[in-house]
Image 1 (tube, rainbow, N blue to C red):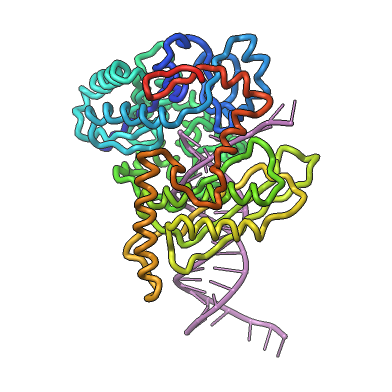
Image 2 (image 1 turned 30 degrees about the vertical axis):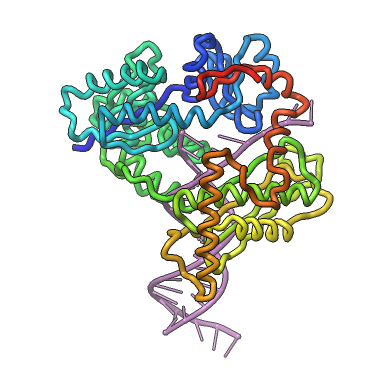
Length: 429
DNA sequence: TCTGGGGTCCTAGGACCC
DNA sequence: TCTGGGGTCCTAGGACCC
């Protein structure tokens, strides 16, 4: 019999902010997306105010003022570091772990004696809280999907121990019938709509649904999800993180761009960042895609979205090469007279950096490029990113971030808010 | 005036081949 | 002009996740 756990940090980004600023304990806290655009994390108090996930912050101004909601821009450097601390603690208790996201991990509990399970999970949970300040919930079940369900139950029971266990016997059916189908792992809103139309409203309904029907009307994943709810594992623990198959760097702009030179500098910086990521995992890109679009929320303005794809004869992670292709591709889809709100660069058809298929006469150039990129990465790592950068990025890409924070609406207000940093909680700016 | 970013997997359909 | 079957590979689009 297999046994899995899912460890999930509660309201992760909001909890991280609280670790470094206890004064916001018990107050509603929201953390905003990159552009200070929408809410990406909420404390329980913020959820209780009805603040939705992904809600644009400009819709919440009154609520924020009335209830003294604490607002933070996201600080991914901090969250990455906290995540590392939390899950190395988890792994010291349960070594067989799959990192699933910045705030979640699956565990394989096959080796843990059944009668000690809940006790050791509870001990692990309180240790994580003590060592890192981050509260986590633990769900235990015979499949990943059921562990997810159990985690949902652990969270739902606010006054409970933070650890819940579920099995696949009929004893658990009553519990499964209390879980909305949309809360089942792998069921998004479109599939939910389709399932509810056919009378499948709860996790129990899904468990009892006809697998062939699911296979036909959803897909193989839908059928496997039902199987997992019946306690038959369809998804295994994956401890080795596979190299990425695609790498994307993109941004929404704080201010629309209607000037080619400016867009070109943005594309150059996206390509340069993507190239860095490629080198991080020792991959080279065989395909590069550039995409641009106007503001999809502005039906009153001319709309335009397009993308251009470049096939690279020799896969590469060389910054100048990728920057050049990104700008050329961008130029092909650029249209005068539109206000562009978002753009991005995607690298795909990734393959290992070596051995690379080289044209005979290319070989020397590539060796030279590798050495230059290596020096550039080392300097940027130690002296700050963009210390060495591509000339086509202009005087830096600071305009992206600077504009974010200088946006006429939020600047004064958000920038005055205290920020928690990993360098010891330095405040304000 | 303000609406995130970065991923994965599956399927249908077209192109092409024998 | 009509008429077959089967295979592979690739891509676009749709769905999902956090």
